[in-house]
Amino acid sequence: MFVREKRIGPYSYLYLVESVREDGKNRQRIIHTLGRKEDVERHGDLDRLVRSVARLAQRSMVLSLLEEGSVPQLSCKRIGPLLLFERLWGDTQCRAVLDELLAGRGFEFPVERAVFLTVLHRLMISGADRACEQWRGDYRIAGVDDLQLHHLYRAMAWLGEELPEGEQNGRTLAPRCINDLVEERLRGATCSPICRSCSWIRRHYISKAGAARPSASAGIRRITDRSSIR
Image 1 (cartoon, one colour):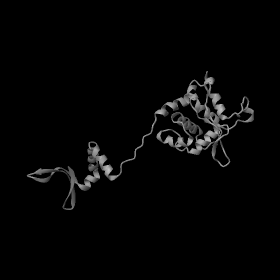
Image 2 (image 1 turned 180 degrees about the horizontal axis):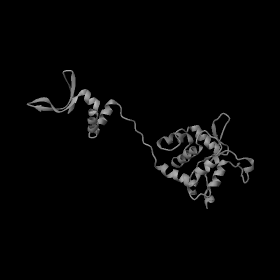
Image 3 (image 1 turned 90 degrees about the vertical axis):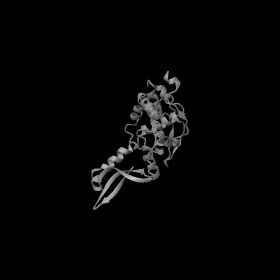
Image 4 (image 1 turned 30 degrees about the vertical axis):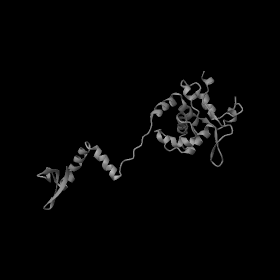
C-alpha cells in the first residue's frame, strides 16, 4: 500500500493505492482518493495519515532511521545513588555546614557542589579527583555540569586552609584547618555514621603557579572517627 500521484489536466491528485494480482498480473487498485495535492498539503491530511500509521509501524520507522543514518543519540544517566546520598547530605547538615563556612568567600564556582561530587565519588568508586571528573558523566548530579578538574582541586585546597592563629587552640602537630571546623560541627549530627564513611577530607594547597598538589601532611582524614560519635 502506498500513495500515488497522478496528474489530470492542470492539477495533481493523490491516491491511496494497493498492489493486487489479478489474472496473473500485478495491478494497482485505488483504495481512496485523497484529493488534489495542494489541498492535501495545505490541510495536512497526509501528515496526519503518516503519524497515524507510524504508531503501528514502529519497526519500519526504526529501520528507516537506520538506513538514513539519523538515529537519535540516546544516553542513560544513573540517579539511584543521588536520591539516597543527596538526602543524607542534607540530613547530616553537611550542606548547611559547608554553606555557612563558605559565606562571604566569593568563590566563582559552587564549592559545596564540588565537595559533594568528590564525596559521592569516593563513596561509590575510590579514586583520584581526576577520575572523578570522568566518572560523573554516568550520573545526573545537579549543579556539577560546569565544574572542571581544577575546581575539585581548589575545593580540596579550601578544606585544607589553615585557620587563623587565634583559632589554633587544641592543635596537634598539624595546624588546625577548615576541615577541622567541618568535623567539629558535624559531630553532633544524628546521621553522623554516613559522615564517618566519607573519606573525603584531603589536604591540598595551591602553589603560586596555580597547580594543586597534596600537602606535606597529606592523607585522607575522615569527618568523624568511631570514638567521636559515641
